[in-house]
Length: 162
Image: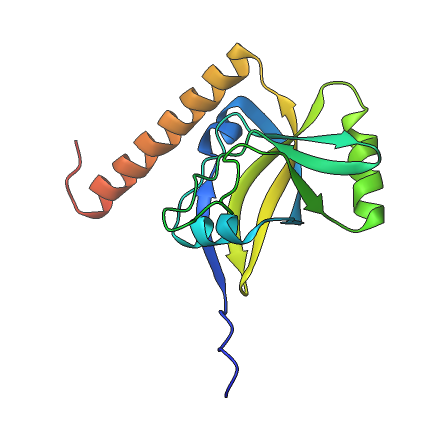
């Protein structure tokens, strides 16, 4: 019997758009996750939520808290707990580097995306610093100004000058 062909490429399951609004992302890392079978099946069905999720160090390891993977519909008594704490799989040097950064003032680990990379479930972790309210307003004003400039350039290129 021939083996199943492996998936290629990257398939995004969930992304945390609010994290980029609430935090300024300084650095990103790709980590694997220790999952059960029903969690993988639920992720493959495209069901997950990263709202209020964060990563934290415990006993020299990194764990992902608050990520919601709903129970697998066809699962039986072997189904998983939807908001259980999941271990992140990284190299020891990466773990030590991330733990060192989180011990700095005001830095936290925020999951940005959950995706499948060549068939393996991965999470993109961002080293983030919380934004103040005025930083968020500045970012919104900057994005609106960029959008308006793009609209004006589009109108100008179509010959619809004001």
